[in-house]
Picture 1 (cartoon, rainbow, N blue to C red):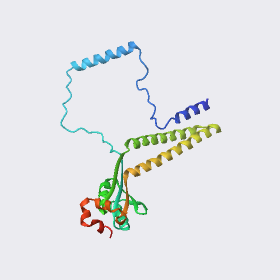
Picture 2: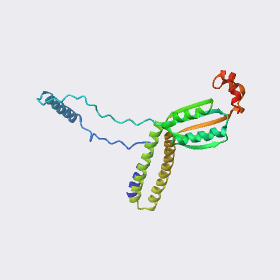
Picture 3: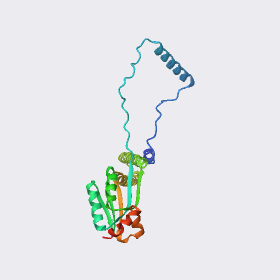
Picture 4: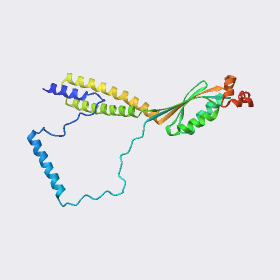
Length: 248
């Protein structure tokens, strides 16, 4: 009898993390047709009595604003990929790192003539504007990815997994046989692994939401074909000798 009870409790604890708690019937035991009619009659009579009574009516609504439920902000990941032409790549890399620090961010990666920085999401536009001042922009790719549903779903599954872990720990305290203890401990290990995996995903997602990513590839002006240099940012700048000035 005890083993059957343990198996039943373990099966309940192993419900999928994606599902919410099971719904309970809040209506109580089902009524017969005659009982239902009697209840309906009583409700109708009570309603009629209330409508015909001399009780004072509810006061009219005032013009005071009603409290509204707070709306959670959307979870958005901002990303920018830029290609900028500069005369001095090393100086541009150092300047980009400086911009990131000034905005409250940091340099994530530097490779050759490219750099990746992370800045607070609310400073994303300002950081992009500062970086694009370093030289003519040959390529610009900016994205805003809404991950609100993904974030919410992951949070729900993580909460469910933690609730499952607590149920399993409670079951383990009531388990006496070695076989049942091993079965519960095996399930506990699986749930803990799932929690660690989902927590890692949540941490990564939260980081990408909080800090936008800006990747910049710098190209030396001397390495850029002349017809491209003449077109950046306006074709007529080539007639002023800009392509020659950019070589220095």
